Image (cartoon, rainbow, N blue to C red; front, side, top):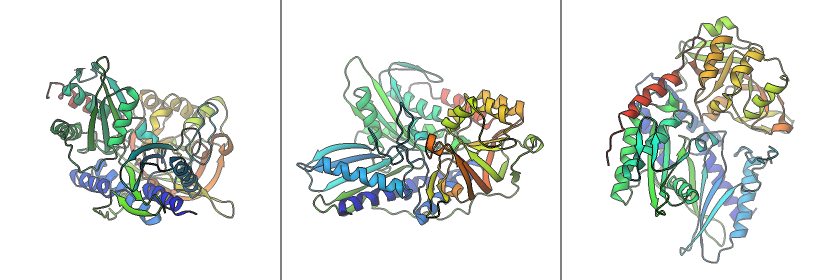
Length: 505
């Protein structure tokens, strides 16, 4: 292995498993803002424990490692084609080792390549500079947060905020609206990069590039610096909180930049990132490929274990679960799942609507999860990372599947909508919120991988994995009595959003 490839593999591994110091400081700040014992505080305790475990075990912080995106600045005359080949090798090798989840899917056939390589993946942005070093930054941005990114064309009419004009005040309204509509689906408390102006493509690229900035820097433009401060302050006043559970910290950082636009267009692009803000960088010797120095690590930050998910008074649910046990649960209850659960994402839900399930699901639990899986020398599967995915994507299917198969529990993150809520009440089932991004925390509750279906058909993330778990912790956020924490937080935060309608800038 060349020094260049070794360095790039180290960068990928460290980005996936070791949260940068500025993000750690932001999470530490959030944890002291929430009231002890609150749902948000409980979620943050779990997040801290997950970050510590990922670093110690050199394992993915979150199972969704997104689309690996590299930002490269190279000296004039440097061979970019050779570096891109080395990057592709490092991505494929990191996938084989379980540091990245195989996420490259053909949009036409649905086939997962299995190695994170394919047309357009990984993403590599090249730029030249007149420095002698080779700078490579990597961002791993999961699909849950990527799906919450947004782009606005001003002027626009925004729910709760009214007219957003082509001015600084209109910009602030669009960013607040983007944060509000994300709720807990993007694994809040999150971060946003904002690009003002340019065309649609360059504006979104500018927004994502803002996420490369250090969280503690100060914008050189005083007006944009004030906008960044204002957005964080007012977003946190919405009380959406960590995971959308309600709480005082919804946004941990906002970075804004602007590019000139044409008279006909005024775009505001918002790149949303989850709390698992995975981006690191290195400066390499362009001749040898060795690492000269790391970026973002000039001020180390150590997180100590928060003591785990508090489970005193938790209610145990053992699969198969009875309707009586489900009807006894209410929003806010902490539960511990024991027994066999089954992972299921978009492809499985679509399949189950048209075909029969490969295993009995009566009284069972479906876990919205696309895990990282590793096979040992004896051919046995082991879980490398297994946090929840965003549940809202399954809203078109979920109520029907609950009724068809007699499911009693759905586990995921971000909550679900009115159709699923009605289905839970009608069928006697419950929605359990796991802590988004806590992939190592939940992986440790899996005692055995009992089997898998549809692996060849759907690929690792979308396959139906059968997992035997012990004391898998979650919170009831939608119950069988028509109550939904997610609906309550959405409505309450909408009222707070309306308070920010009047012009400020």
